[in-house]
Length: 126
Image (cartoon, rainbow, N blue to C red):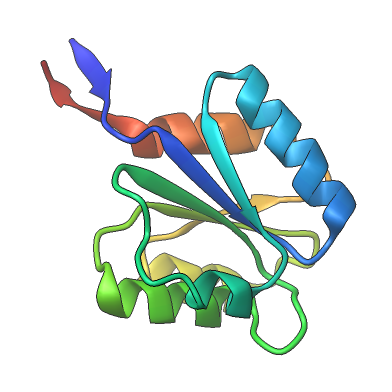
């Protein structure tokens, strides 16, 4: 039997409409959701909540999503994360892969995002 070991999803995206939409989607799936409008806003937090999964947009001003995830992983090496992007390319995919981060492509986020989160949140046998 598998169990979910993470329950809070943090979304980081500079597009307020995307934040609202993803928050609604994930809350309807039963997740507790926290949203941040920039990488810097997340980095200002003293700590991440326990049992968290990050959903981070790639293209943001000042700091892109992979740079953010690299910084977060320096403090929390095992934090599960997904990168979302409407502009996938081989460099992004390769760099994300080296960090162990799945890339989910916009605008078709619903199924890929939900499945990606489920995959990250499923733990071992109960």
